[in-house]
Image (spheres, rainbow, N blue to C red):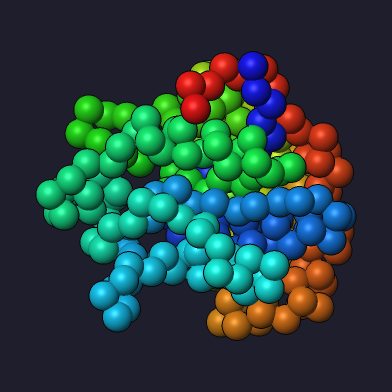
Amino acid sequence: MTDMSGIFLTGTDTDAGKTIATLLLTHAFLQQGVDVYPYKPVQSGAEEREGKLIAPDAEIYQLLPELKDQELSTYLYKMASSPHLAAEQEGTVIPIEEVITNIKEKAIDQEMLLVEGAGGLYVPLNRQGYCIIDLIEELKFPVVIVARASLGTINHTMLTVEALKNRGLHVTGIILSSTVPEDEMIEQDNRQMIEQLTGVPIIGTIPFIQNISSYLADEASRSEITENWRIKQLQEVEIRGYETTI
């Protein structure tokens, strides 16, 4: 039996703000003295530079000096599409069992592992219909949902929470990300209604900022955003008692 500790970050949609949320959550844990490691196992839309594939999301994580030169993504594909299609375009398939083993190994090695999924819950990883939600179900990690803060997010977030609960998975918190400018009254009401309807706490919000990745290169800017995040409830999350074959 092996102890693991991890949280899975999923989105209500592609470009909901998962990567920025993962960066900020990593920063918040580091500020609390937690040995935390962000990991994006599968990345489509990878960029080729000097004959090597680079994961753009991992580069965002590396805005944190603690993560320089670390392997933060493993299975990289060039086409900016659903991962199953991106892999097919390179004449391969995503090795699901390897992905699971890799995540478990990293979860054993770290005090806290933050796993960023690809897109939303029903993004397929292969033609057989194995989706991100199936990966979460195998890992049994608690989930943080990253959702847009803007109009329409109540429905998208409710559907995501319900899908996870229907699988018996624990949703431990929601992060709302302002990916576009929005009326403050709408965003505030969205926060209130999502907590009321789902029973899941909003643990943090990300304001709309132009060129946010450049802004977050500054430690003080990261701290300003995460200062009031409610991460204490996440610090005690532990996934225990999994038999592994590694």
